[in-house]
Image 1 (cartoon, rainbow, N blue to C red):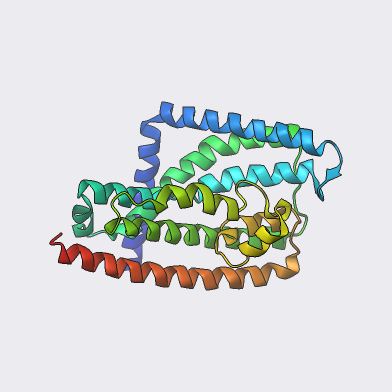
Image 2: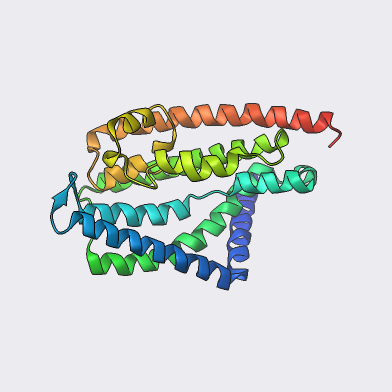
Length: 268
């Protein structure tokens, strides 16, 4: 019975997140339109750079596949948890949310999931499908690749959420929280391969990314999908993901405990 209630709660939270996205459809479609214009410009730039052959060890079809999957997956696993926590701390509404019977982390996770489903599947996926049909993409032949990539992306979604949620909790100490935009828009996007595939980055940058969790958000599963990583290293990637998941979870629990203690001491 408890499991059934939990599943119903998760479904309701996800549906609510999706509905909030559909309420402002014009805004969502406009943001998606400009996003797709930017995406199309990227495609044309890479088309010009790579041409019909292979340059930098990469074909245009491989790059197009990577860019399209990045576009879809970034929207699908995206999380605004950190921004929402910062906003709640700023307004003082965080205490109201913490008094609710629903865990704040659970609420934010499934709210993100509902919004992401709308953005990725309803808006982004159809456009990418049209572009893929026109330009052509690279698809793996081994069914195991699809299985491994799916598991890796689920792990990546959990890792990204924990990372951003933890950064959001820093707002209990810094109301303006300078880490939010700086990390989200720079460090994370570079080392996760969202800006440029890491196989095209300088060797020192790719080596540095090995010691950070960001490459395991999206880059590793996508590199495996387009054939830039061998299937033989898939288990090793999963092991690294689970290690980082455990580390991020432990860090989140530590910061969360300290944040709740700080809120209590302040009389919140």
